[in-house]
Amino acid sequence: MARRMSNKDRIQKKAAEAKAKEKEKASKKKAKTTTKKAKKAPAKRTKKAPVPVRMKIVWAVCSPTGKILKTYLYPKKKDAEAEAKRLTKTKKGEHKVRPEKVPMED
Image (tube, rainbow, N blue to C red):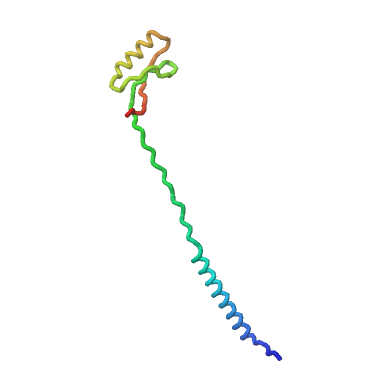
């Protein structure tokens, strides 16, 4: 006849089985990590900073509607004002001179 297991024996047997399972899981986990290749993090691409455009100021002779008719370099403000006076006398409406920023040519 088979001998019945005591409660103490059952607990020890379950503990031994649990330790064996833990060892198996650990060895499988090690095998998985060694066979898997480590994924590289994707390289971050940095955007190039936009090159600032150099600007210069010119004098613009404008029609009464605001349309630019003619431009003069910054030091030639008197010429621009004279042109605005001439256009005001010859055409309808008051022509004005205003500063405008335009990109510099290299």
